[in-house]
Length: 289
Image 1: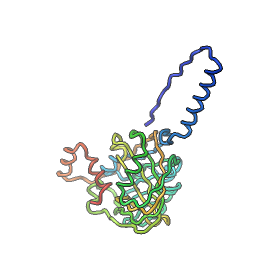
Image 2 (image 1 turned 30 degrees about the vertical axis):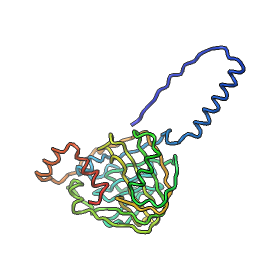
Image 3 (image 1 turned 180 degrees about the vertical axis):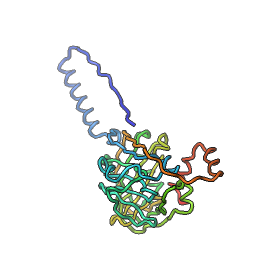
Image 4 (image 1 turned 90 degrees about the vertical axis):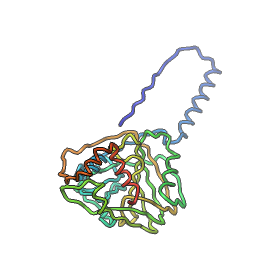
């Protein structure tokens, strides 16, 4: 989504005295210095690339919407899911996927992705955190620096973790089972203790619900790339947090639909009655349940 703000430039021709000219120079200098040292988060220039939608993933569309190579053409930082699921994270231009028990491996350029949120990360602001007891505390620290709740944000957190509670899941083959149903018996939760690594986080406004995951969406990868997963909670010993605001959104929709397993009558009725069906997915993404 691209927001454009147009400014009207008005010109006046009036005689100026030397004293007025000097005052204007001082004023313009002060304005220039203020702009130079203003918070970088007020000048969003980044682009988020969204491949597939969260609502399609919820409905069971877990075939490839893009490939690792296609994502790498414009991005070096992101999170998503593999074909049939498997938690995916991209750092420094390399994509890694979690096995069912959280063991990471680097993906091939030809590997498919069923969902991906990515950007070419350019740090705009940095701060240090220590002894963060949970992910809610980390999220509050981040949001205090965000000046515009209508923007998207990419966040990179690198450091030492006392614990990372994460999950991956068993992979599926077609016909795919909708994700909320699949996770009831196929989600695997684990803890990475006393590890070094990176959180890749994306924050989306609520009005993008269904396109992306509203609020925070967080994945983890260890420094040795062996531990990967979707994050439920963290206990941070110390870390560096980097933020980038994103004001452009480029969305690629899937052109091929995969077969989805028929849901039960109860599940169909529940979905038809629940106009906020994505809330079930949001709960799945933020809680170990």
